[in-house]
Image (cartoon, rainbow, N blue to C red; front, side, top):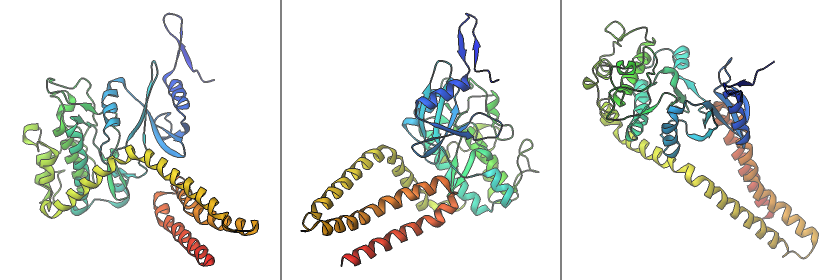
Length: 368
């Protein structure tokens, strides 16, 4: 029998956080699909309106940071869709990045080339730039928290993130992963963006050597690549004052920075443009549906120009088939996206569009 409640000291009944979380998700319209990690109730995969997301239990200390990230999404990080609260339980719902972690990439492909490592560093530093602008420190940048999806690199899991406060001497909660965390994560000082750059340096060294950290980084575990070694040594200096002082400074030190500079700027502009998409998506959908309804009404009206009912029905049938083809293709693509792997979906979704175009041309040709 599963125990779902406890008695508090005053004799009242308190619902366990897991049960409260499930109730919150159900009330908000989320359908549970199953745990993201085997043998653990949370994180939990959930679905709402055919969109799969990730639900997580949240420590109250993390709520201010999550609220800020919800209001101002960070490029190449999961978007916080909702924060659900109850008396003794807080649940966050964020977008699912359905890719492969750097841990898995190393296991299947081995060490990264210096050129591939540059791409990883570029993507993560652009994300850290945006975090730095909001005075947010991730605090748990490691191989398993970087996801590769569609050849882009995403920083996931903000459960350890915190807001930087200039007046503090150290963090309130000491968090981080051994081997990747900077010394200040353990209470020697307050963490800031330089702490994330330290962790990034460790990650980049792992990619180049193919080895995860088993202790402090030294000459025996440092990459032998002559270009990358000094960059990683500077990023992982024990004294934060000796590291790169910002993500921008480290980005400027990457190999071939001048060559990639136009690429950086265009990438930043594309990411900034995408940040507006969640704000305009709903109004755009409403406008398109309005135009679609007007088109249907216009088609019905045009059908009455025919003198006989058989001719009208034939006109309406062909018209609705042409109008409905893009809509059917859109929802078919959405179904494929949520039921197929990313690679399989990208491989076949365009064939559906080709079939749609051929069908429309055939119908137009038939109408002649």
